[in-house]
Image (cartoon, rainbow, N blue to C red; front, side):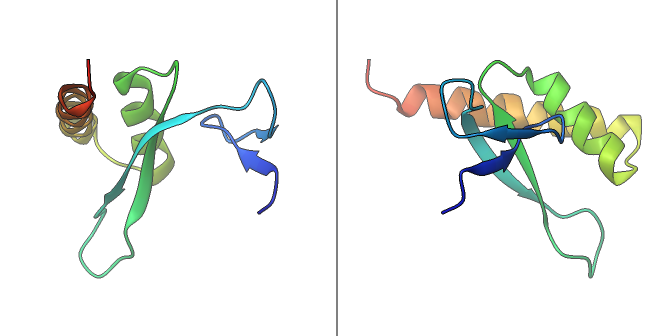
Length: 85
């Protein structure tokens, strides 16, 4: 496995103490017949930031940002509920 990764800004980051930790990944259907695109939420990143950056990268509408944000919020909540206390 390569120790070279891209962080959510698209910049390179390397395995080490400053490596971004993914909290979750979601495969998003951008358009019918197109391959799924991966939306990742990283530790320290807000769901709004993740949704906005993904939408900008893929040319999606502001309404899609809100849908993606809602989906991420729901997934984060579910993930928190599943973690042992």
